[in-house]
Length: 512
Ligand code: ATP
Image (cartoon, rainbow, N blue to C red; front, side):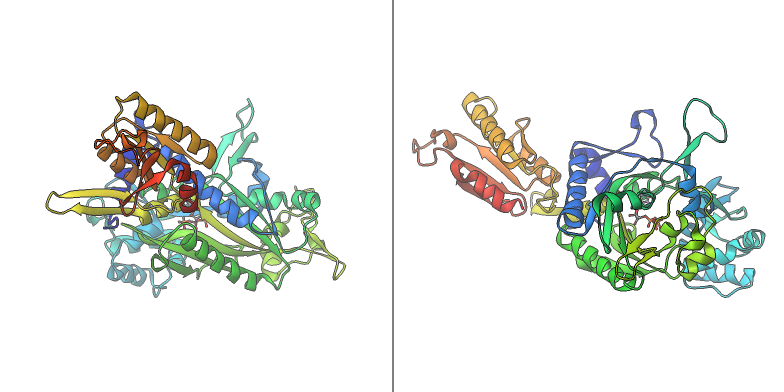
């Protein structure tokens, strides 16, 4: 049976060492999580597969890694200083703070209609547009929330709501020894800006021609109003982002291609069920966007929610980070909204040899969350299987794709007090480790049945068991199983006897 609640995933993650709450022994730090021994392997595998698909297997991509500490002007001209905000509202009775749109999503349609009626508008079915309308008059919105008896889930009663207001999500930090208003930087809220400000550096050092893209993976920081739902919404997150630069006019077609390519990647490489993936077409667009489509995954407890956003950012970012914008050819939206840039020393343009003109490329941005990807992979793989109904024997098994599995092979001795068996098992482990170049473990800390179940929960595709037969010491005195081992398949629990000489080939063929 698949997971029906996030709690099952959270409990497995803690029990088996995938993910722990951050700073746990001091009571935690909200919105932070630490990846444990299995979690770091799973996460690295996800990132590696993404990099392989998006950088190595294409001929039009470069990878970079940019600093987390970011000059404030980068985030001023990107629009983050002004616009990277979420709306919040407080309940004075429960002292609980909510992201305004999240609070409204928890209300009944009747309550939402009552808010709209009290505010004097018809409710737009798109929540982002409805919220924007309410924020245009916070005092009236406050009255409407109270009149419509908007409920706080904490106590199930209508709240004493404050005026909704916006809150900037960026973290500021002091840079250098002097703590004043000037000496600060932002922790980047997305990896994207590092790729825009390095556009010229990458272009000049690689001689790329359009279309081409830059990929980056790494941490981003968002002071989320209410971090929640485990690693789905955290304050320190990791992203995998691409900025793909195209000639204006080619953007719409390329956008569709990236959406399809990434749906296919989540399904074929990560193993997500296509039926649990949906698309959301944004109606209200960010200031830079011409079109944004989210790839949603059907998480237990949460339902369909965002896994990746794929936006057409037009020429906004390159145009906005350029000096002398009046000399550039910009799209109407960017020209209209862009802030005159008084600090950049560069023009982020591309010389088009076909037209002999400098152009500002358009950008398609597939932006995925590593943590949300890890969570989706765990939810998809989780299975509670009834092994024996009469004995109420249920095993938890993570049916991860082998390429994602934190441990590929576990080598287990049947008896840990028999030095010959132990030595043989350790030698096989070492050999497999060297040859496979993937994580192989040796474990003798419990009886074999328990060890199998432990590896099932870790998602280990194969267990190799070394026993008396391996040493030619069968109970019946036969030696035909000398130098063979038992290989147990995680998913079927079927066991096969394989010659040690064939083991590497057997595993290699099945671990791709
Ligand atoms: P949301 O609407 O859920 O707040 P977003 O639209 O602001 O997300 P983007 O700015 O498009 O997110 O970021 C790209 C990706 O980064 C998202 O699709 C998501 O996978 C991930 N991401 C964004 N914010 C968080 C967060 N607080 N915790 C974990 N992952 C996040």
